[in-house]
Image 1 (cartoon, rainbow, N blue to C red):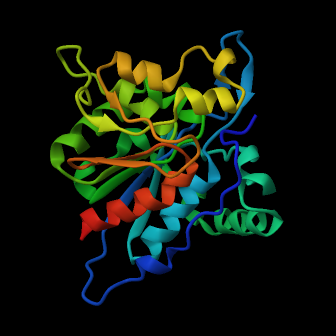
Image 2: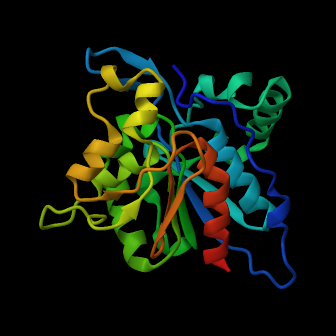
Length: 254
């Protein structure tokens, strides 16, 4: 079943037009390499990344004149969650066609680099789109966890949206604590997972697991845009939060 329960059209990037004398930044998109999410009964639920959560920030960053590089575990070509392309989740058929066309134009998705080869020094910001895929791989990926720890410590803008905060669970420090403990974040909520029909099938719920790790989840209204900024960390609760999250990242890039 799809990740969100109400239709939404991503925001236009018109407000993020390049400004004169703007210095182009290089932004790393870290996407899930998983195309399924293992449920509590062992069923493999087809998934991947959620289209709106990649497209809306991509278009905003590109419109502002920035460069995008995509990285995935092992350098696999990421899979889009087919549910995220449905008309009911994109404001109708026209929106569905628009987002499909936008994905087709994102050439970076077809040529990802290996997450294991990423050098943080090469980038000015890091962004993680969601979808249920991160619940499968990035939640337990130590390479991603180290990148998150290093990005947090660098002061560079770090954007993470919807289910992608699952990746924060792998950001475990040498003393066994989570690097994001004490940070305020937005993430896909238990209520939203229940409304999407998957809460009772999941091995674990993101909001609960983040709280167990000491992360302070700020819960907003289900399906409404909700973005939380805590120092250099910018997080969004759901697909509708992707565009406003991108706007906050752009502010931090100056």
